[in-house]
Amino acid sequence: MKRKILWLGLSWLIAAALVLSSCGPAETGEQEEEEEEEEEEEEEIVKETGEPQYGGTINVFHRVANTEPQSADQTSGVSGTNDWSAFYTEWLLLGDIDGKGPRGTNEYSFVPQEYIPEEFLAGWLAESYEVPDPKTILFHIRPGVMWTGREGVMEAREFTAEDAAYSLNRYWNSNAGGTRVPFLEEIYAEGDTCVVKMTKFHADWPYLIAFGWCCGQYPQEVVEAGADEWRNAVGTGPFILDEYVKGSHMLYQKNPNYWRTTTIDGKEYEIPFVDALRCPIIPDVSTQVAALRTGKIDYQWRVNLKYEDTLAQTSPELKKVKFLTSVMSFVSLKCTPDSIFSDRELRRAMFIGTDIATVMEAMWMEGEVHGFPINPETPGVYVPLDELPATAAELYDYNPEKARQMIVDAGYPDGFKIELVTGTTQDSQDLSALVAGMWEEIGVDVTLIPMEAAALTSISYSHDYKHGIITGRTTTNPVRTLQAIGLPGQIWNRSVYENDHYVDLWEKAAQDPVVSTRNATLKELGLFFLEEAAYIPFGNYYSLCYYWPWVKNYYGEIECGYANIAPLVAEMWIDQDLKAEMGFK
Image (spheres, rainbow, N blue to C red):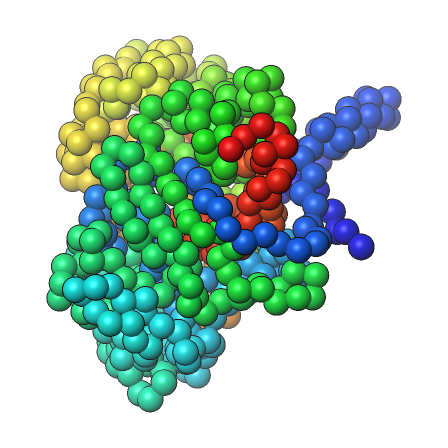
């Protein structure tokens, strides 16, 4: 029996519930009819039946394939390295896509980016793990997994607990990992187990050392040969890096000795199904969309919502998944004692005087206006807009008259002037102009200071700006997000916010090994920080994942680790006959 999975975003359901709750009987009936029509138009993803096909090349455009790959070494901390190396590098743990995802029990969608709750993780290079006490993690290494080897670098050999300990120690002592894992005390191998000792329990340990950013596994031989060089790449993953052609593509061949299998209709299959994976490098967005439209890209991880109508007209056969992103833009209001925004009421006035819904529609077309500091895709921690306390909910109730009066009451009857640092891209300029225009209505005279990307990044990290800066970035990981944006000394704390109560709550959550009580503390902390208004967030926007009908065995998952789609691609196959029938080679 075929199993149908209809993909409706959690946030969309929340929004629909809000609309229904505000409607009268007649209006509700009309709304239900409209929703039924919308549901009929939603993409249906049907679970595959029948015999998978081996062979062919799959063309995948992933998260950072608009930029040239940089270092092959994840511990370099270079942005995007995970995306390119994840096809051959593996982690100790990753998302349980076969067991608890849509192709299994469907307990978790694997749509939220960059974070997976611990209960939905699976053993990967570590066959299993345990936490026998709050200061110890034991990774039991999977037997029989092989490093692929590479001529001139190393012979193929088995992955061991010593390899895991070596990789984690190297990550711990790198620029990428060092500041992120101060809770580590000792890492060593003991038989077939990698033992991690901590000075204290840290709730975010799975992300920080087992499945997250920059903690993939590297053999010592590759490090000695030069881990930053693509030509030295060796891993245990489903693919083997074959070539990197600058300005053109990365090409990977299947790993013929890959350890994983997948089960379809009760039958076990070796993976990957495809012979090769090609990741084109295309900087220009219009060229990306053209490549997708003409079938030169089989699967594209993210496409801006503004191309949805055009692609529907030119390529109606394309399949899509709409998903809520973890990334958002926001204004950081500098909270240092010498700044005007050390005054909490002024910060709240700025928030109330910003029409978040209008900004969302103008800049990103569709999204959830409330997703800060906790992402809507974070179960157990996120509080929906209609459940916020009144003092938090009023921040989203755009009211320029009230905001103007709050500014007057704070001692500025004639308003005040500020400087706002922003980027030089067209989107940055449009966003900053839109916000500055809203603030002008409440008596705030804004001088925009545009900066090129490198300078903007530098000043955002150094916090060397006077009043405020427009940047962005959050994650669905509540512990990590609340640490980064609110703790003193964090480079991502762009508001330079400091509050002892905040620190106490975060420490309480981070050191709590019990998920339920930890989430309760994180929920309390998120609400507290929202009301502090150190940031003015513009909400989470929707994006699209596209794939052609000939791409089989895909069920709408977006990630199964930090920026990691490799396990998903390894289970996809290409229906060559269907592709030919549709007129594509």
